[in-house]
Amino acid sequence: MKLNDNESKQFDCSRGCTVERTDEGELKCEYRQGCCKLEVYDWLPGVKQEQYRNYFEVRFKNTRKGIYVNASGQTIKTGDMVIVEAATGHDLGIVTLEGPVVSRQMLCKKIDPENAAFRKIYRKAKLFDIEKWQEAIAREHETMIRARQIAAELGLDMKIGDVEFQGDGTKAIFYYIADGRVDFRQLIKVFAEEFHIRIEMKQIGARQEAGLIGGLGVCGRELCCSNYISAFQSITTSAARIQDLSLNPQKLAGQCGKLKCCLNYETASYIDAQSRIPRVSNPLEFQDGLAYLMKTDILKEVMYFSYDQSSMANLYALDASQVREIIRMNRNGVKPDSLKSEPEASAPDFVSAVGDDSITRFDEDRRKRRSNRKNNKRRKK
Image 1 (spheres, rainbow, N blue to C red):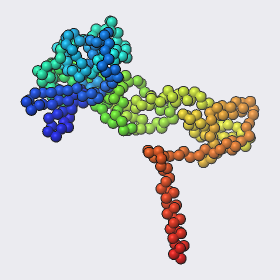
Image 2 (cartoon, helix red, strand yellow):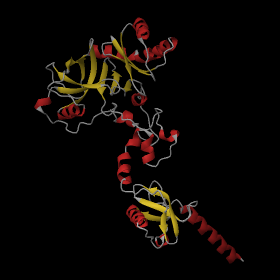
Image 3 (cartoon, rainbow, N blue to C red):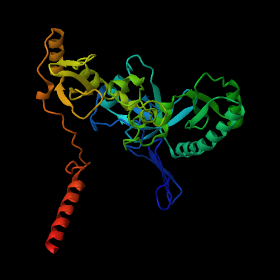
Image 4 (cartoon, rainbow, N blue to C red):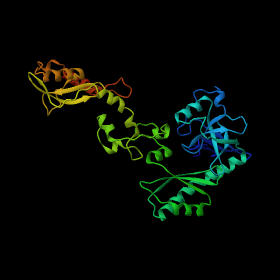
């Protein structure tokens, strides 16, 4: 994506760097912190830890990253472009973490530094390496379009979501989405003949595809899957039921077509609050009639009852502890006096986004205008 007026600087947000061609024709690549997806903030900058001084986090395209050990003997720091070991050949990545935070990343990913086999950082990238890397990147979009055409011609029920070339240009990773099992043995042969590179097929889910593409959610913020989520948990409609949400697929589904990841965020709080709310299977018995449960505010732990089962007009609010006590009294054959001794539940107060204006402020102005008009007419008469 080009954002400069002279279109000389490009922002490669999928890899977290800027690419610029200088006036002398030299290619210049710089790490742009905050542009990478699933970036980890280094909250201990400048702090050294002898035990992990040779371990670095190296990023590649989108969310692919790994821990590498510095075997070059060169001084490497965050933002350097390095040549690293790959399964075949070598790859080019950007160092995004160093120091004690790398040890926290190992702990998070359950990597034991004593027993794990880390790939090596060979050296810092030279200008020739960066030029070759950019040539490989320039082929990605065209390769992805052609790969989709080939998959459609072979009649495979799959979608090529993205293509990532290795730094040396000899291998490409094809990310695909498929509902079922796909036999792509013939597809790999056709890809190898068409593109003359080594092929690696990697299946991803709909949520991972949304994380690769990115975007904004209905909340106005960046998608969680492209911002920080790296391990996707299973989400079911029970999370929506627990939070008393409407089971509307259009509102519960995210841009990936699956249930929104944010449905799990407050589920634990609702489960904890519901554990203190009694289950009301029958109406509460009072001396002046039966009170029916109409609605429940789960987080406030307040339950609303009415004598008229078909009307929401006259509601009376009771705390969950009070309801539990009344149920216990009814089981013992005791009926409280009346629910009408409790104050009626008032309508909720709606405020604007600023928080200091009432939503009915215009109605009050209209009343004042009407009264002023009547007074003016009387004066004229």
